Length: 160
Length: 160
DNA sequence: GTAAAACCTCAACCTGGGTTTAGATCAAGC
DNA sequence: GCTTGATCTAAACCCAGGTTGAGGTTTTAC
Image (tube, rainbow over all chains, first blue to last red):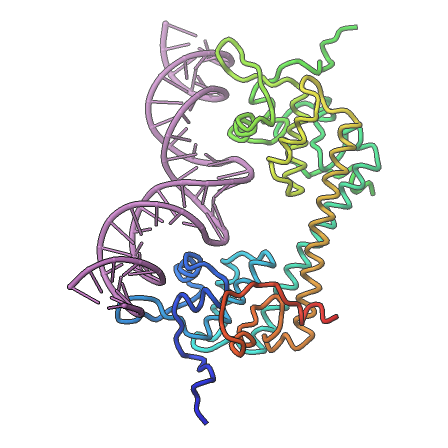
């Protein structure tokens, strides 16, 4: 049986092919390469050739972007990935668990803000005197001046 | 009784005083002014004087920043606020409810991503063949080429 | 009266995640 | 061989949300 119809993991794709497969603009591909997220070979005319397993990396970049993970973090994760072949199942489990943790952190942060804002709406904060989300300038006026560190008191938010 | 110890809502504060009360850098105050979020008077030497009720606006800006609300949105909200006095209780209720809605939207978006990522970890997506977060290039290879619209299929994420 | 500190404007710079443009080179079809 | 389209590099530009710096005035403190 011929190997022809099957893709070799290290065969080479042109820019156009990668663009067609991933939907990522050539400028973005160059950008990722410049930032060390992907690597390329060159043909004799200096044009880029992408090894097929780079498609995996690009997919991971897209997933990360969709999740709001900064490229710098992705680059860091990529240093732990095999350089010459596609990431393994195990790699993907590790990466996706880490990203899930980051999503959870972000969700918790937002839920905390929601809680504070709800408390502000539901308490004396409506007078805008004591809320942690709003700087308590009225109170400060009775206490003299000085640099105000915001988010330091929490009389409204956390009355306990 | 003298009015001296009580602050007039329209009395004028210098840059230094506003910086001391809000913790916001002068450059940021100028930036907010340049973008129409706050207004100032000037003294005879052209130096800025802030009417006291601007402190409320600055507090609102800080709260918005903390919530991740873009300044442009804040500027838009501010067009609905009284120009010459502090925002009222009613104003604050209206604004804070709107911001709470935006927080809820962001939280729901993140929860949705978490759900997708969890599904990816827990199903055949681990093979990175069919996941909505990862571009399904293996499948495409058996179907010919063409531009790939990402996030269009949901065989993994939403099997129903 | 003078020096230091604060303030002014305007312009340049920063990060992140790229896009756009200019000018040159390469590959492919006829 | 020639034209057209694809690609190359480098640099400039975009957004947000500001900060930093240069060079000039104003206010304040002694």
